[in-house]
Length: 263
Image (cartoon, rainbow, N blue to C red):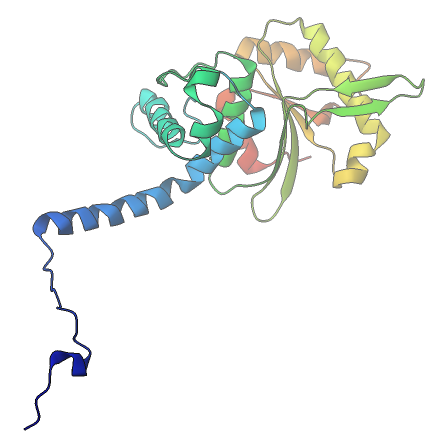
């Protein structure tokens, strides 16, 4: 018989067979677990990123329970939001753009009270993204949501809503201008702002651009303020299209978005 060696069969290199250890199996399964967890968190993190990139927020502080509903204790929402923010901060674009050195990101806390209008808008953005059964078609934050128009006297006016959004429940599409009211301004000033919105409505500019005029939603701090502004709009002789305006408490937002404007 002719002599042969292992090279004739393509086995020139020694074959090493490695049996997976218990520790390696645990690590592999943990990797799969975290991949699945990352997929589950994707929508929440996208909402966080949309909120921060859109608002160009530079403040440290609470994200509240926006987009993180469904946890047992009220403080759980804020804590989970903080954990999500910490993940985004340590990896990915949030860590690069919103670094601790430039913007003072300390440890995010679990407080639910917004401490600035920017964070109120961020809170609102995440609540819209977190509303079950609703698709956010478009979001415009300041200054992209501002609108300019000229009245009959050629005077230029500028509306500065805190947020514009278009949402859909799969059947209907709704358009919204959101105004965050702290309750510190006199009701008369809010009424003047409403009249300005009505003047803009009468130009038909928004309707030509989007096909509909957004409902103007004032998010107010308490029932007393809500009643005061409702009374003011109903008694106003100047504002004819009162159906353009809604006054709601923060807790009524999800119901409004799910039910639609209805006008």
